[in-house]
Image 1 (cartoon, rainbow, N blue to C red):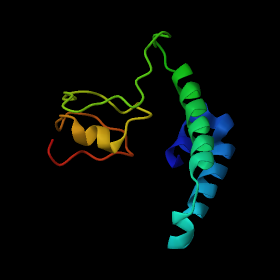
Image 2: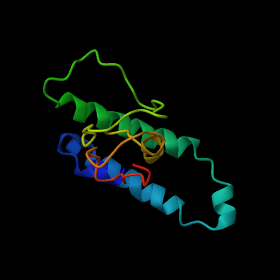
Image 3: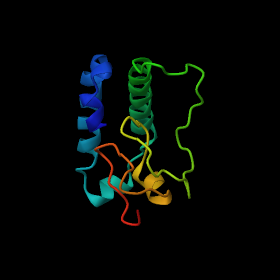
Image 4: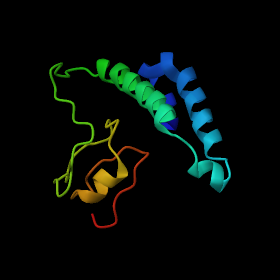
Length: 119
């Protein structure tokens, strides 16, 4: 969520994103007992809706983008060959997805993610 506030196309949502981040961080400051009793469905739903709207705003600004492109969020990348790929513009790419894929030194990653050690 933090890096979403740096995406210029998502500027209309930056305030809401910051508030959601603050609320999420506040939830993490509870005691162990409070954390185990948390019902995260509602906060997760709110954050998910904001991130989906952020994604829509960012993707709408991509030039040359095919409008009928398939939604690939949550794609299983186990064994996927990402060598030489430029993933810098990936919005919903996760570290576990990268960790399950194959890549190399030439694979370009978003700044928020780390190159897996096995690459």
